[in-house]
Image (cartoon, rainbow, N blue to C red; front, top):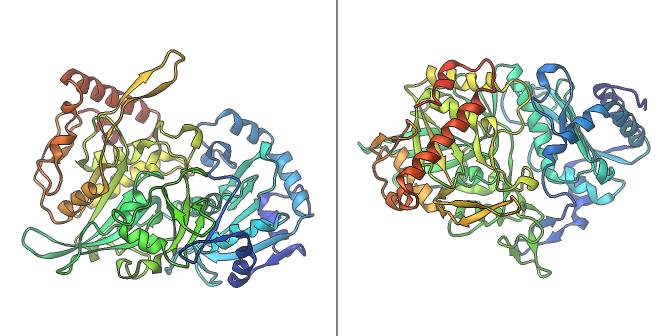
Length: 543
């Protein structure tokens, strides 16, 4: 192999290389099984060396339109040496045994990317990566319409030189020095979202579900629901929750938990058959649907604490707070929607957009948004960093456009897309900002300059959030103006004591006003970074 080839050219040589073994699904499973531990559920748990995505070591390479707006020092170093790195990687791959697995993303007639993974198995245990990744996607369909996307994994690359090189315009991603399955999952989804945008769709880091609920007149309605959120905010939890909707035709059916491609008619094309859920705190009582699915023999766990006798402890975070499991959508049984695509708007009674944040001071539990406020919520993507994204910054306040760390290209373009979409269908779209954090937190600064929690937050619990979901889809909420942020909030919600989440129970009036003004000022400063953003979105910062 020629070490000087461009990634797309190198992939062509790799496809016919003699040192690549092409695996079937059965072969991938057979080779991986010896490196896993059987759990009490009869499924496998694997342990990786790297246990989160290496976001700060990820670099997009190509024309100016696909490069990141901001780069850290390590990313700049990686970019400066990328040509030399490629030569080294290509020479190394020519001398190491590789395995290959091919999959198809999605089930539709218009956009189903062909995904190919190559993994170095110099360490034979690395074969678990294609095994796990393959269980999230569909069997390879040669005739499926879509671009060809390629992942190249070299897990044993020196730790000191770990890096993820993304070539969006060549549809190739290199993962060097990481054996974390999340890099594989997001590697293909990132490239697919970029390609979807080129075709007029918008790739969303969002769960999708169908909800059947009876309105005030007792008429059964069917709503599509898209839930946006960073890892650890509750996106998967609530995408896969029934919210107590059962009986008399009511139900909540899972479509997808992570990424969909939104079309301008409101149809959302799904991507995966296996959901890569976060197992931290997984509980049989508050998350019954997820727990039952995770108990299936077909689930594959990663970095979950398992005792020698196979007993699982989802509460034990000794290995990591980012334990994971690949759960098959089919294991949700009657709680799973038929197929992975959400119907267009003209086949639904409406579409509900839920932007999930996790704030811990004064933000309301639920806020109803105008189209401009919905686009603003999309652009702000407010939450706190988790161990799944950047463990070095876990707990810090962050803003990520679309709550999507995998956007390639112009972020303002995506915010404008959302604004136009919601505005054009305002009669059928409802948008909300959901806070899954809490209220009342106070921080303090120590003499050395570090900050810590002085008073813990009153957490919003899953049953309380579920009660809010039920009230929304049943149209049982009277909305009143929120005085600080210009949104609407519930006057009351059945099953929720809203008074205990009143910020004035924890802060003085002046403290609340100061925090609100500070938050609005920070939002305005953040939004002003984006050139070309529709002026209505910018104005939504000012209330």
